[in-house]
Every structure is written in structure tokens, then in C-alpha cells.
Length: 77
Image: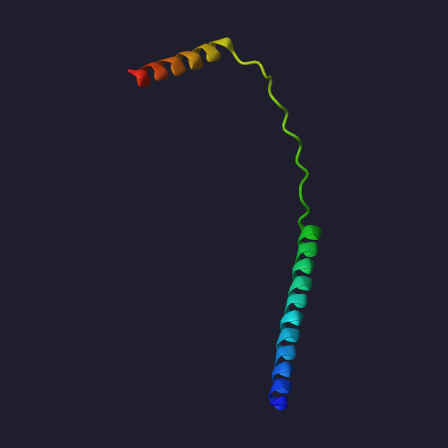
């Protein structure tokens, strides 16, 4: 029984060690790729979008108001 526990622990440690090693290599590879990509393809700085004037044409407001009124009137009929 003691020999089986020893063998089980050994297999468990080898398995966990191999998984840990693989994950560590994966992290190193991903970081290396990210660094390489940022070096050769840097992000372009975007200029902020200029906001348009907050004023709206009164004719547009009247048209939208009339359309909403007509829609609500048709829904109530």
C-alpha cells in the first residue's frame, strides 16, 4: 500500500510539474509575442473627435414633434 501511495504521489508531482512548466512557457511566449507586435506595429494615437454644436435646427425639432404626435395619435385610435 505504501508503495502505491509513493507511486501515485510521484505521478501526481510529475503531472503537476509538466502542466506548470507548460503554462509558464505559454505565458513567456504570449508576453514575447505582445512585445514583438508592439515594437513593429505600435498603436496609433487617435485624435479626439470634435463635438458638433449642440444647437438643433428648429425645423427639425418641429418635424420630429409632429411625427411623434401623429404616431401617438394613430396608436390611440
